[in-house]
Structure formats: structure tokens, C-alpha cells
Amino acid sequence: MLIVQKFGGTSVANLERVRAVGERVRKTAGDGHKVVVVLSAPAGETDQLLKLASEITNQPDPRECDSLVALGEQKSVALLGLYLKAQNVPCVSLSGWQVPVWTDSEHGKARIRHIEPERIFKELGSGKVVIVTGFQGITEEGDVATLGRGGSDTSAVALAAALKADLCEIYTDVDGVYTADPKVVSGPKLLQKISYEEMMELADAGAKVLQTRSVEVAAKHRVPLKVRSSFNDHPGTEVVSENESLEKILVAGVTLNKNEARISIRRIPEGQGVLAKFFGPLAEAGINVDMIVENLAADGTADLGFTVSKGDLRTAMKYAEMVAKKMGAGRVEAAGDIAKISIVGLGMRTHAGVAYRIFQILADLGVAVQMVTTSEIKVSLVVAMDDAEKAVRELHKAFGLEKNA
Ligand code: ADP
Ligand code: ASP
Ligand code: MG
Image 1 (cartoon, rainbow, N blue to C red):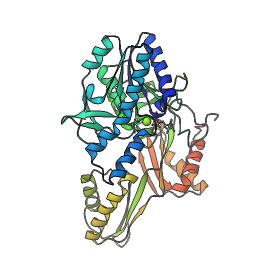
Image 2: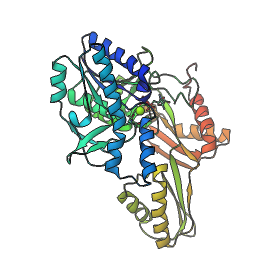
Image 3: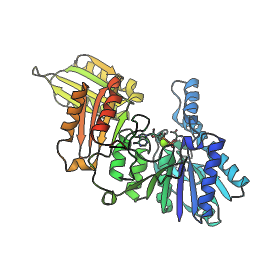
Image 4: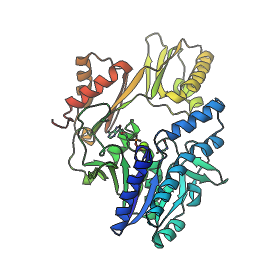
């Protein structure tokens, strides 16, 4: 089989962990498989490099910043290459540009356009393990570009798709995909299988165990995908197409995202196209708006609330204040002390009343819901940050997701 094995930051955090990865890779190759390894930077390294950039200037140039943050992955692949060669395991380490992994030019959030598989096939053909940097590629202009935080997952899945690999394994620091983040909820259930669609929604809602884009690519190319622990031999979670998932459970998981902030604009005077006027400039500035609520008052004015990621808050406020002033609206306020909770499950398609049950549980808990959006298989709510963890735990319990439920 041709297997892509991706190891995340904690799995290559220090030399001891790099050696453990080396041993796992050696065993897989020893079993007769062709192995392509994709590595993240050692845990904390990307943050540290970003901090250095922000200490030089508070507006780092995106191209230079990408050259800097790509170094973390470079370090990991070289260290594993050194280890495997010292163990007489034939291998070669490659950076994104050496593969090459071609991306667009959106530095810091580039998308993979195309991967040329020839070099990797040649190296595999000569009996080598191929070790590739995650998170990075090269633009048409010949510059290094990175794929956004958590992007090594996407590198691994995209490589698996380009190489038509038989399996893509994502090794991390937990045993697989759980019904909730094990760092927030104690005793969540480990899912044996999950559908691509549910996984995509969970990732998008904040379960960082897989980057959303990696699940999109896996679903599109039907890449057989597993999430496993690099610390043990647990079989982990398999991400499968819907008809292969075990059963149509009502709720597959609950997520918590503390990375959004809310902007509220009061008393926007009556008029056409309020939403377009506010969201046009934000879209042009490349800012993603997540949840939106508009309330019309009896006097004809409107209140508008929406969420953006905390990193975009300052720029989003600038535009919101500008448009509000032009339209003669009232106060513009920002709130960073909020959190978004999402409940995801394919079973919601066929079971009515899930949202009602959620509201009832939160009301009993005395937690106020500030915003709500629903889709076919997801309900998302914004609550006060201080209420968020207890609300997640209670919802998780109420939907029977605990290990011993
Ligand atoms: P890596 O460095 O291996 O890419 P990440 O930190 O990006 O690892 O992702 C793994 C983390 O995702 C886990 O340590 C866990 O805290 C978090 N996580 C959040 N939600 C979930 C979930 N539903 N199932 C498993 N892990 C989750
Ligand atoms: N090193 C990058 C990050 O920390 C990419 C990754 O780990 O997937 O976001
Ligand atoms: Mg990750």
C-alpha cells in the first residue's frame, strides 16, 4: 500500500518524539508499504516564529512572514531525515518547493492548486521513505507560501489525493475524533467512524483536530482518512462517506470556539440594502463574517449583530464604524467575551426539535443565547464566554455523548 502519515506539532515536539515517529515510520516501511511522511513544525515553533515577526513590526509583510514561518516544518523534516538515515532507513526530506506543491499567492492562507507527484514517485520507486514539509508550498512567482494555521493536515490529504494513496493517517495527541474536545469535556466518546460531512462541520465550528480544508479535500477526492494517536496503537477514527457511517446518531459532536468576537450596530435608519452596505467592504477586505442577526424595530430602525474572528476584529470595527457613520446609525460596539457553541449531527436532518431541546437545556442552566444559526446538520449559538464551558458540558451530557452514557 501507499500510505501518507502526517504527524502534528506535539508528535514532533522534541527529539524523543521525533525518534518515536521515526520508529513508527520504519515499522510501516518494514511491513512493505511505501511511505510518505508529512510533518508539522515542533509544537509552539510556528507561534514563536510569528511572535518574532510581530516583534520586528506590527504589520509584518506577508511574503517575508511566510519565509519565516515555513522554517518550523523545515526543521522537523530534516531532523526525521537525519534520524532515519542514521538507522539505515533510506529516505529523503523535501520542502514544499522541492516537491513542488504549487499554491496561489495568498500568503498566510494560500490554497494548494496542484501537486506534481513525479519526484515523490521517483524517490518511492528507489525504495526511499519520502518526508515532506506540511503547511507550505510555492507560488507561481517562486515564493514560499503557507496554508493557514493547522495547514499540515491539508498538505497531507492533498498529497494523498495527488499520489492516489491507499490511506492517509493523521497522527496527533489524542486517540481520534471525540464527541467533544477532551480538553474541555471530561469523558467524551471516541467515534469509531464519522462522515466527511459531519467532520467538516465540526472542524469548521472549531474542533481543530483536522483543518476544515483538509476534510473538504478528502471528501472531494474520497481520500481514505484516519485520525490516530502518535502516542499509542489505538486504531483511531475513520472518516468515511455517509452511507458507510455506523448509524445515524442524532448528534456526533459538540464544539466550542472562543476565537470569535461580536460587533453590534444599533439604530440603523430605515433604508434599502443595509446588509450589503455593511458586508460589502468587509468582503472586499477579505474578512469572513460568520453569524449574522438583524432585528427590525417598530420605529423602522434596525439593529445588526455579526461575528468575525478575533484576529479580524480591529479591521472589521474600522469598516463598521465608517459605514455606520455614513448611514447615521447609532452606537457601534465590539464584544470579545463571547464564545460559539455548535452541535453537529446527520440525525438532525430527520429529527425535528433538536434546536428546541438545546434552548431548553440552556434555559434550565440560566445561560442566555445571544445569537443562533441553524443549518441542515448543525445548530450554532453565541453565549457569554463565562457560560461557554459549562454549557458545552451540559449539552454534551444531555445528548448522551458521554463515554459511559
Ligand atoms: P496537531 O498538532 O497534531 O495537528 P492539533 O492541536 O491541531 O494537533 O489538534 C489536536 C487537538 O484537537 C487535540 O489535542 C484536542 O484538544 C483538539 N480537539 C478539539 N476538538 C476535538 C474533538 N472533537 N476530537 C478530538 N480532538 C479535538
Ligand atoms: N505548523 C503550522 C501551525 O502551527 C501548521 C500545522 O501544524 O498544521 O499552524
Ligand atoms: Mg493541527
